[in-house]
Image (cartoon, rainbow, N blue to C red; front, side, top):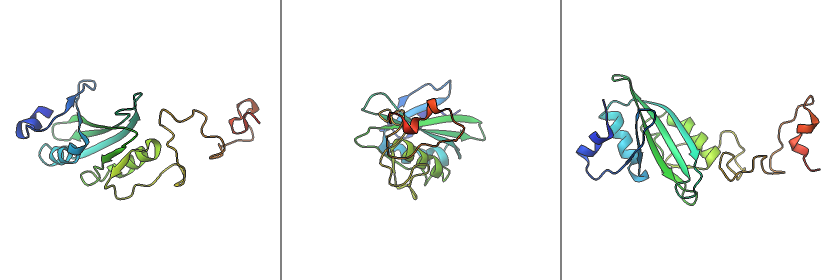
Length: 170
């Protein structure tokens, strides 16, 4: 079974923080090493499938965003996780699209919802929000009821008027 220590054996300069994810191998890597490590995991260790990419906002400002890549080796049936952190002032991380093309949609979603910028992504544009929308709805500092007046919230004619958040306070 693969262990991140195997990467360190051939590259002693590699630093990472181990994290336990329900018994699966997980490492938080410096963003400048993500692309190199991803290529090695795919070509040397057989992690051919990128199953998922998740963005998340942490409570603290420094290292405020985290991107997690869920990888699988079909031969050994092992699953591992790669994580990278960035903060709000410099939300750049390398895109892993060149390693796993399936990252395309997932990285775009993390960009749209959190504002994480994936450097060298071939098509980094919004998926859910309009291109000119300047906010990122899943950030911790985003108002729960949205930005008043920015985008009209959906309304259904059968909706209970007590829950008409589109016209609150008017």
